[in-house]
Length: 329
Image 1 (cartoon, rainbow, N blue to C red):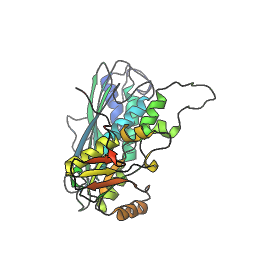
Image 2 (cartoon, rainbow, N blue to C red):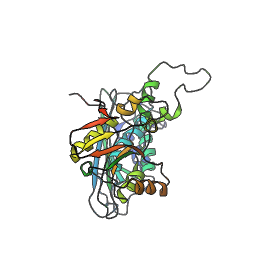
Image 3 (spheres, rainbow, N blue to C red):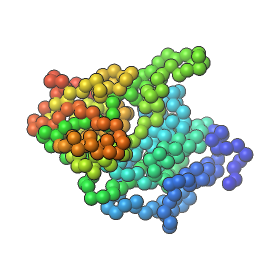
Image 4 (cartoon, helix red, strand yellow):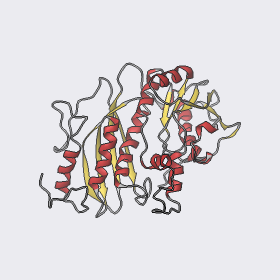
């Protein structure tokens, strides 16, 4: 592999584009490997074999500097990890696997793209998917786009937003608000170098910097017949309303302390977003809990029920507050 000098691209910030592509080709060549006859990085388009029969699922997401990430508190590797995981999280919400991904990066001068790619590669390995192509460009601000490709083995229908029914129980796959709390604390006053300890609890910092797509939870929920799902990206309230409106049901939410992560506020749990836990609707919560236990997953946390009063949304018996993230254009 030819480069302008002997330094690794991960150590350089002015890497030539073609040399960087060669580095990325090698970096993404590790397991999981491509199927025989498939084409990855290096051609005009990738050619891949679907992992399972049936429909191919496609999801794409953007991570934009100043909107989704702050380079002052997240390393290039953290940003790469997050970019891959947030796209894969949409597949998790469908009960699908992730098989392949495309990565495109538009970066400002001096940004270490190779280090970002290292984070993408770590996340891809954790999700069991292979990065097979993408694009590179310069930009005034960092923009990372990931397209995730997946499939859903077996005969169980895909999880969708529009399947919830009156009487279904609503659950989340884990406590909420950790990412918002981590962002709040990471962005606040800190005293690095005093005592050698990060002033932010590690679980909160990690939740913000390196979220995890709940693929195993989505697969288990689909197999056991959950009726609807969504991942918590914009905030619990905003996302569960998406499910209710798509399913034409009402909501009676009762978000207890067990649904609020340690170190997070109730407001952060309700509207903070970027938790990437799943909200699931099910007519058989005991079967769902048993399926999670059998898979070695955390027990689902009940947060309410669906009703036959479309448009009527309550929280603890009162009006549901307006919470959550919404882009303004």
